[in-house]
Image (cartoon, rainbow, N blue to C red):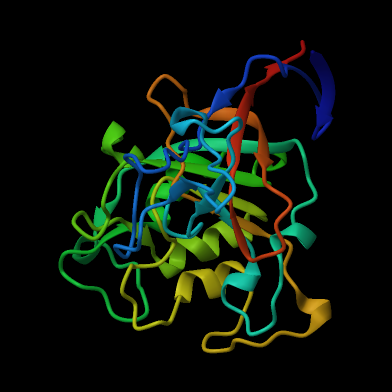
Length: 273
């Protein structure tokens, strides 16, 4: 299926039959990325006194119990309910289907080599996504394609699809970098690491608070101030996918919770002359 659409006065086409897949499939009971050393995502055949739901074990059908921690076991999309006392669900937040998006590649910088800041204070071994690295890639972008920003970090190793992040700490955003993304009007932020914030940040979640326009230290929110922005973490963007403009599709299950496993597609676009 080929569609035609308009962004910022320009006409584009896109073939929806040939997407790029940038989420990490959950291999239950197999290799998968992990943060905080939580239990891996697993599946087990249901067994009762009357049957076993596994054809390999003599059952006549298959059905399984699935255990997963979306924030920690792979690609997931989350909403402001991640940091609020109120039970706000992504189910009620994410209603867009095809989103204009920009894919960029950045090289995280050692925290003490930049004047960018973080709260709590930076550590010597921290690596950060900085304001300068984002400006160099986004300052000349058509604003129509900054509804969503997808960030690929270097080095872009395939091990991201099964990395144990407690053994290999990930980069995170500086305050200045996330404020810059807010100034561009970014509504959907996708990254190839487990969290916008440092893994151990004294529970502050500073960058999440800033992105969602939430006062530092607060965990309650007025209903009218609920942000409709989303964060997707632990994607993997293959090196064959070039930086540029795309249509983004975030597919989620109909779970009523703050974060869910997600399946992410990018579609090439062509500008009409």
